[in-house]
Amino acid sequence: MANIEPLSNVDAAWLRMEDPTNLMMVSGILTFKEPLDYGRLREVVGRRLLQFDRFRKRVVQPRLPLAPAYWEYDPHFSLDAHMHRVALPEPGDKAALQAIVSDLMSTPLDFTKPLWMVHVIENYEGGTAVCVRLHHCIADGMALVYVLLSLTDLSPDAKAGSSEKIKQPRSRRGLFGGGVTSILKQTSATAGAARSLARRALHEGRTTLTRPTRAVEIAQWSGDNVLAAGRLFLRSHDPDTSFKGKLGTQKRAAWSRPLAMKDVKKIKNVTGGTVNDVLVAAMTGGLRRYLLARGEDVRGLSFRAAVPINLRQPDEMGTLGNKFGLLFLDLPVGIADPLDRLNEVHKRMEELKTSKEGPVGLAILGTMGVVPQELQGTLVEMFGKKLTAVMTNVPGPPMPLYMGGQRIHELMFWVPQSGRLGLGISIISYAGRVQLGVATDAGLVPNPDAIIEGFYQEFDALLALAVEAEAIAQQASLPVPPDAAPMPAAETAVTFNPNGDLQHINGIGPTYAARLEEAGVVTKEQLVAMPSEKLAEILDASLSRAESILAEAQKGAG
Image (cartoon, rainbow, N blue to C red):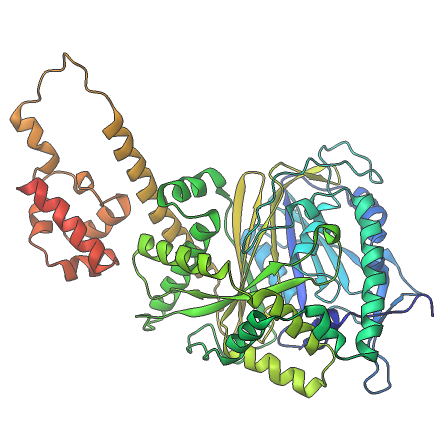
């Protein structure tokens, strides 16, 4: 009996939410430009991953009714049952890799064994990809990233059994932040922390079973918590869109090319928001473009994404299990103008930072782990109707890392879309770059790459505005040489020549100029004669933005 450990209430809730159409797996993908030595990688996984007890334990469901599920060591554990080596079909490109990752995300784990699996996928663009899947009852998304990075090194020459200590960068806390320190802690130290968490989970699990009111005592609900819970339950249902509907068993995965963090920060610095604001606003624009392409009405549309937030205390950093709350973020899909949408996202994110909903969400998950299965299903369905997506952002390490002797080129992960949702969005930073991933139900969104393409367009539009703003600011700050001759009147008028470049007008960058050209508007004379409503339609911008551009054009024309 010493090897038996009851699941915590929250971990049990994730186990019981498993459904053939909505697998409760956390999935990650790592890519390498060079082939990996499979034997060396196997040794790394065996020595480091198995330091975490839960990767050698399976979940047992007792036959007795109401008896809690528990962890026990798998008496037949074999590392080879959890590591598979496969070759990517030709042409071995990103599309082929996304197809095999989609298939793996659609395949349930074997519940007779510990709930994790590693696929080493060879022949990917001359290198290797590694897909890691684990059940959410083992750990949440933040912990999965930590687990993956516990397999890494700072140099290609580290031995499989060694664990280099990585300098801990400043933690990015807030809605999505926190946990960078936990990701980068020394592996040997976290193994002990995981055992400590297991002892706490065992104690609290027993206490909650014998004293149901203990769950409420632990939560220490204040009046604010009660009000937050009320707001969660009383929220209206999300509107029907292509992203909502009956789920199937097939899933689709896609991810973006890496974006330079310096470009994201350039937008952030010009607009006054945050890195998260920029990425969420561009992603929201990508969702908008997808719906428009399907002919859906997006006027005034907002729908919610569940945003997990890390609730681990400092002494729990680096531990497994589930310790996160949920916040509901309203995505302003109905706002066409990229900058207006970014400002609105920033406003809504700031409002959420003072919300009490996060801890309440964790408490509700804990309750779902002990209530009858039928009631849990009712709660899951109720919250599913209030949401459209799950959106997760995890700050990864700022420096390049190595696994099995090779440098990790790209890193991406996805969390399950609990609540029977069909859309998952993931954002992760690594080595000065950031990537965005999308996971969808194939019956609802068979082509998530279209969302990624929309994200690119929205991000490029924001970056063009930031570059233009920087150029204007730099030009305004340049000193005029004292001996500079005044420019002839004819040349002075070039900036606002009716046949000149539209990009000389404040507010029109490359993206807007291209849209105007597509509409046949190539001169300032044509632009000035245009009604603001028509201009807003052509630019896919707000009416106020169109009026501002027309005012700038009229100043130059006059």
